[in-house]
Figure 1 (tube, rainbow, N blue to C red):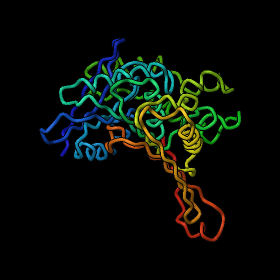
Figure 2: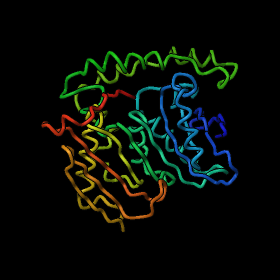
Figure 3: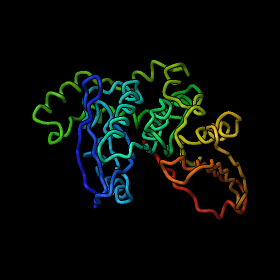
Figure 4: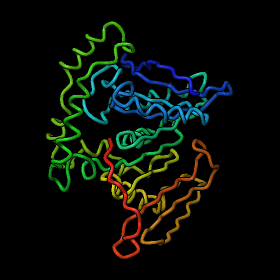
Length: 315
């Protein structure tokens, strides 16, 4: 079984972040690290997912769960989703993971929705140790394909859901056993200084520079880390992400030097699969070929016999 360690990772501005490491039970390290960074409180609200990280450890990785700044048991104040502070924190955390005694120096990131967004954003910063990312059900266009606006109009169904419960989540205290005796003081700081993210979103009702900062769409071709995007069009955040990746990967200048790209399409029972492969060794952190698959439902008798996908909402 995986060994579990709770650590605090110091940032250059003095704030420390709370991380849980799931390490292989064996002593045959060093190992690469795989991180997911979320604002959803790893030690209580979403602690039930720990088994997935333990599985990664059983396969020879150090799996890392990180509470982003100002959430869970991490210090600081969360000012917004995907803030500049969060982005810097991710880069510094990647560097920290790469320099630990148990580490090979290679780090990967993954995540569903929120963790997919910040995996793309971290990759745009090009930290040397970040070798691969797996964004799952994420978007590279925050204004047009997220929970805020659609065609310039507020997405009211999403606005009464995600922003509301994030007000409550961000107001919760750090976990006392992980923070220490002064956890009440830290809780008070959060209550006094954390503003609802929604206020910032409402102040930017057009697709301006604010939304571009957290969107990878225009710069996605600059990502050098091996990338696998997972999504389906029945999930509300993924279709433009896949579209832009397909366009970028087909464009002439997208591939790292020395890598060959093969693009193939096939139609099978009403679906279109588009696969992209890059040459290189097959290993998650060794320039694994990128795989992108797009499937869509088509009208007709054949499509009617295909199993219907359940609509999933996750952040």
